[in-house]
Length: 283
Image (cartoon, rainbow, N blue to C red; front, side, top):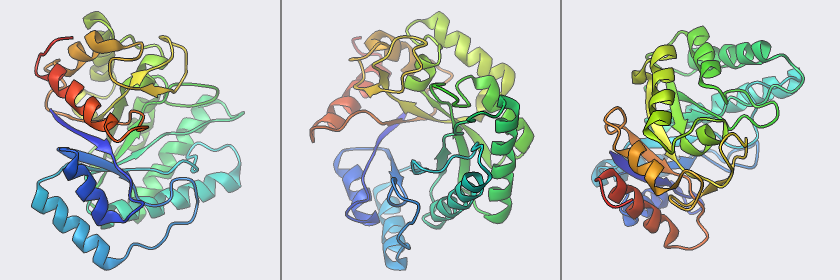
């Protein structure tokens, strides 16, 4: 299994690659611009070229771009929905431009709509985006914790979206451990891990999982609380991650850490923990 973390592009795209390399990552994830704003600064051609060259030189990958915080592809309001699909299209184009392997999107919140309407809006939006922007970057939907009116807390909902999109060669699933646990999938035992993977197999097929987000959970099982914490310091725990990371159905995948980064050494510690557990080390 390959491992990486989310790194900042605050000092530019090329510096993000260098930061991932300096941390000893195999892969890495970024935002393509300011994650808290609708407007994105245009990508400079020289920065894109240097970014892509550094990725090749360092042998890093997959490269993952995560959608920013504001777009809601399930939005109830027509204006916000249209604005969101436009923004996601632009960010997906940026991911294609830098030759990212994956583009990760949360399916959003339904508001007062019924769940089926919201799921259909997500699917129609993704089809529109993929039709407008060709490229090899695979569009991944990420499972959510299921708080409030969030869609995609249950994997069957994501399966419905992907079946409606009907574009398996360009889409797939990013499985987040914290979100899954918060949504009620027990990753602390082999039985629980078997259950979630059997659900994936029966709805999507295991081959639809292309990426893992590795985060321990502060909230209890089924709490719907999307609060990440360091690997082994949350409710999933070292034993759960040890089982998860050594499951042969998952060992060919890449795991991206989105754990808290309060100290410079936090990422290094979490990377060391997941590598030890993936190698069958002490839990």
